[in-house]
Image (cartoon, rainbow, N blue to C red; front, side, top):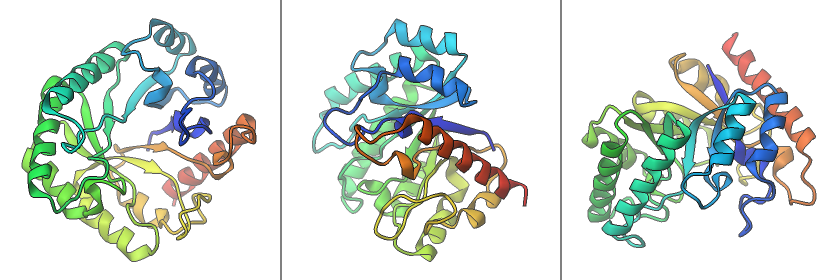
Length: 267
């Protein structure tokens, strides 16, 4: 399994209005030193500009390939019009082409109700529009809670009904309280999974090491095709305030978590 590093793991301001405490250009040399040559990029790290030549040049200089764009485009019809989505889709397509992303992570409808059939249909058509603009890019609908993915079957049906070669799922559990529902979600979605987000949590949703939480990775990872890639998304030591954040400690834990995943592959 090829394991990427998600730049969101290096950003303690991720869930604050600030979003970014250090620019990506400062982080890239540290990412290289840690041994990562492929990354998933937290979209705010690219700034609000569609393209930034300085960032692209820094990526090239560091020898780092941006594989996945973790986009926060909102395709929820309750908050975005068709015209706004067309503009968003064009911006995403331009960003993907400029930086050379191979995959696009898309949040599947923030705060959308999976039982709202009309909204689900609109969302599906919007994904189809984006997929048409990016025929060579994998569009990965993340199975993230607080979205259409709250119903595991609904998000699967969207992929099935679109039946497009470049639309699939990016798996992570939507429910962290019990082990069996996680495995049931995985079994249902497994045929459509093309990427994984690696993290683990306790039932209270607090982040823990990969081998400590409720997600049974030793049962899930061996069932995946070896061609499926993964991204290490969060490590517990990095879930803190900007003032408490320790980049060196974060990289140490990142490397330890990667080693744990490799140990599962060796079993």
